[in-house]
Length: 276
Image (cartoon, rainbow, N blue to C red; front, side, top):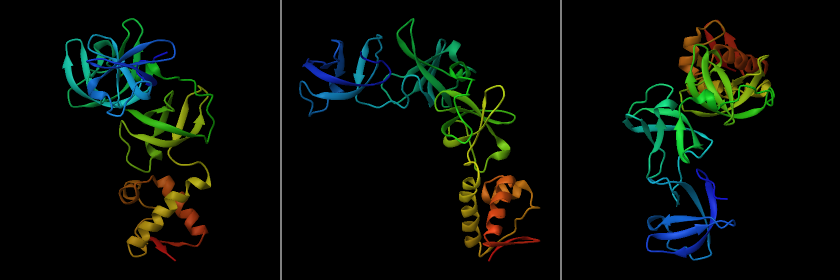
């Protein structure tokens, strides 16, 4: 079966004036246009191609790689807006349509949006949607606290950022727990912090437990060395001053210097911390 919107490994069947026809084991075939045919391709060779639909909605193959595949989320730029939808650059010759009804907010040329790519069963076309919540599972009870996960930031909220977990679940990343700058569209490595009673997930960028402190402690040591052994920051410093210097929250900072103090790597003084 040839999968539209995904990579397929197909066999070269026959040459024509417009390209090479490729096929699968079930007898389905489609065209790989001449401009995408590798010079080394021979009949009966296997080739990996991406399959999408052309301007006449016919399945067609390409050796170009798209920025996003079917049933995945991507962060794409709008290149045109019409009275029936917006078109996104997804790395292929034919731009990707976001119908008006699938736009969370009206899209603008030049701006980038997190979208979900799916196959419209009624039309057989690949289309995208920025109504992200419609494609996410709110029940994250399959996940466990402490589990490492892949995150994609898709929305700013009053509490922090809504994120996509493992291309499936919705999660929340709290602003007051961030130790680096985060923006919509970022792909991050994170961890499940907790599964709430409503079965939704809270996530963190820091590995839970003592191991999560280590990278931050090392960062502080590096900053201390670069500053000649002293930083004018301690438990009493304003969160803004800590973030401006170290790009970490005050909570993370306090944990990190606590571990460094226990290891006798630093002294905590009234006006800052100093290397021992």
